[in-house]
Length: 285
Ligand code: C2E
Ligand code: MG
Ligand code: MG
Ligand code: MG
Image (cartoon, rainbow, N blue to C red; front, side):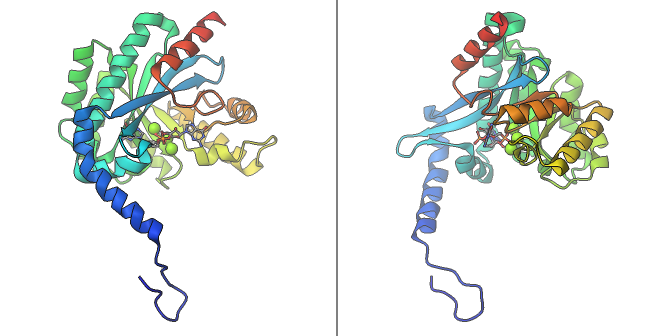
């Protein structure tokens, strides 16, 4: 690809982009067999109560151990799985594994174990008519109560959602499954719209917490987060913050009234055994 002559828009021949496109194609065709061969695995990242530091749950984050490319993060393959529809069986697999893990934690630690497992749902899964039934079956098969499960849906997936799309989420919420609005603040949605959604948790996007890595934080960032927290609490929503990387951030977010936090400051996503250790430390302290 040559530069287009003149003007200020041009495109350079980019061998790296070509390589990426080839890999993308290869990954897409390899996805279905990868699920059959068990190449996916889940890492768990703790959700920590800002008030007392206890582990309240964990978010399940899927990875692909690719035989040639090594461990791939979800950003590399979730969009491909969405494009091909594989996200539905893959998402079901993630949910079942995660709920089984939640049961194992509960059996092993009782109340000291992570109480809840957060599972991400892609927009395709929301549109899939089997969502409610699949979820019910997984909970029944594993013998886990619905309150152990929180489904994360991004704000952008729900922008402009009509009642048909919200119906399955309402049904799940009525059963006692929590619904969290993920990456909140990135979707430019109408705040008044929140009232209409069957969500009980707001997950404030990392872009808001970034400005709080230093102390004192940017005063405008503080005001914005303060306003969102006040709004969320007035609507009876709990606030979780993503991407907490420093103690200064954690402290400022606690002062601002956020309920739970997640981020590298507490723990990176890791194997389920890590959570056993964290829960034990927690119970001992
Ligand atoms: P997300 O749901 O917003 O998940 C949070 C992401 O932030 C994760 O990236 C996590 O590893 C990362 N993170 C956590 N703490 C920190 C921190 O302190 N600093 C920084 N810089 N990053 C932090 P990850 O694991 O790469 O996942 C990316 C996205 O992929 C997720 O964003 C979620 O939207 C999607 N995803 C992950 N697992 C699944 C899944 O099973 N199904 C679906 N549909 N999507 C998934
Ligand atoms: Mg999430
Ligand atoms: Mg998020
Ligand atoms: Mg995010």
